[in-house]
Length: 150
Image (spheres, rainbow, N blue to C red):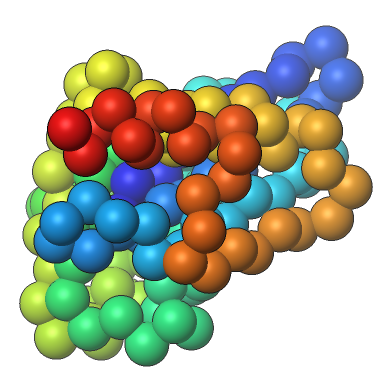
């Protein structure tokens, strides 16, 4: 599972994306959402990760690898520490949620490894309501997903 957030600071918008793939790289589901929130990059990434985790819990996923390019969020997810700021509290809630999964791992990926998630987060600025897609690659990332499968 990859997640990402995109910020449009001028308009106070947060684009949210999560993409779940199987062990062969095939897309199982995606979430795209837009929120009118003025957040820092850290808080936006934490918010996007939490929303993605909720979506994948609703899909009854039991095992996953959570990948994101926000090092600070990944590091907090992997430590028992709690950061008491807004993003830290979102991460604390996410830890409680993902601890209910049978097996999970959180890893940092470079931006290049998170391309599909990043494109979907940017695309979220164009939607008017939350978009959940199952077993289909959204058009804006089909070329990225297909290239990654080669």
